Amino acid sequence: MLESMTPSGSLTTAVRRMPKTSNLPLIGSLPQLLRDPFGFVAQARATHGDIYRLNLGLINVVVLNQPRHAQYVLRDNAANYSKSGPMWNAVRGMLGNGLVVSEGDFWLRQRRMMQPQFHRQRLAALQTLMVEAIAEALDSWEVAADGATPFDLTPGFNRLTMKVIVRTLFGTGLTAQEMDDTAEAMTYALDFLMKAILVEPLPRWLPVPGRKKYQQALARFDEIVYGIIAQCRAGKLSDDHLLAMLLDVVDEETGEGMTDQQLRDEVATLFLAGYETTSLALSWAFHHLMQHPEMMGKLQAEVDSALNGRQPTLADLPQLPYTRMVLQEAMRLQPPSYWLPRTAVADDEIDGYHIPAGTQVVSLTYMYHRHPEHWENADQFDPERFTPERSANRHRYAWIPFGAGQRLCIGRDFAMMEGQLALAMVAQRFNITAVPDHEVKPMLSSTLRPKNGVMVTLEKRA
Image (cartoon, rainbow, N blue to C red):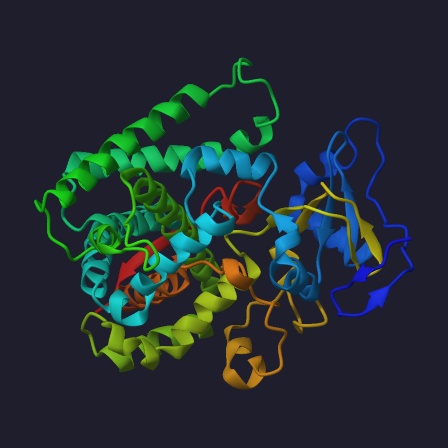
């Protein structure tokens, strides 16, 4: 028997037997998970309920599907659920000790130093850089529009958000070659990350295809970032970008700033947060809009009315509420970061189930965003479910694409500003229609990507 606090806040001594997925020898439910990962987790919740043990043969994890579980693990009892285990070790290989992976006093120090740089008034200084980068990226889309050739939105938005994150992080400090090298290095590193997670428990001497190139990509990224840091410290670059802002921050308690290593780790973390996650949200948003022409029309009408043909500014964003809701709904249905793993530090209990110390616990954001208790017709694309009236009584952890609790992503407002500006500027500039008979499905990766891309035809608007 175990007595502990449950997510509902009540004490219990009755420990129930946790349901478990397939018991195939050595492989458990792995074949079904790999064949149709998101169909599998939906069926598993329907079959086993909101909490169950996912059997993957040599690995067992507890999967949580109910928003109150997110509140418990990510906020109420967050001290008992650490970022340890193979997944986080692999991420640390890429991000060092940046905010996403650091813990304890060091995390608190870094968060306290960085938080002011992401307040709205500081982000306003980056808006011009952001809009310029988006506009430059969209200029290249016009080639596809002029030729009426099929265009894949997924790499298109990857290049767009890469341009935005490089410009806002470094200003104009990178050469064209360095910008291309940075994009190539981080793209490869992100692509390799899921493999790095899977092979993390294996011996380091075991050869892994792609690992050497991954290490070379990170080395090239480090070379570029440390070079920019040195130039900034020497006063050779402008100070209108995020890296310059981070160079100026100091810890109020010690009066110390960040070392070059700490700056590098935070820059890598901001890349991860501001590059692919926003790109995927935009790709999925237009995928859904193309299935609903009336919603695409409503988006374009709002943009046309608010902007009257000019480029948007930060002051315009409150006049684009439907644009924001489209982005929110896309991130509900396909949250770029669809799972949040933690490891139980000490024995615990959730909904009457014993959670032994050392258990891998996965908060399944993908299913929180579809839980039938909190979302009506959960599989349907409906941006207006995010109106103030319909959102008023919703559980605050039913929508957590940026994480939750004290570990809420520091770049949330940056990402939403970037996404809303990009969504508006694309809708203002192009009519977009889906290429017929091209199936778009989510694929299992380190982020929730559309398998085979999102193929479209672009037409320039008058």
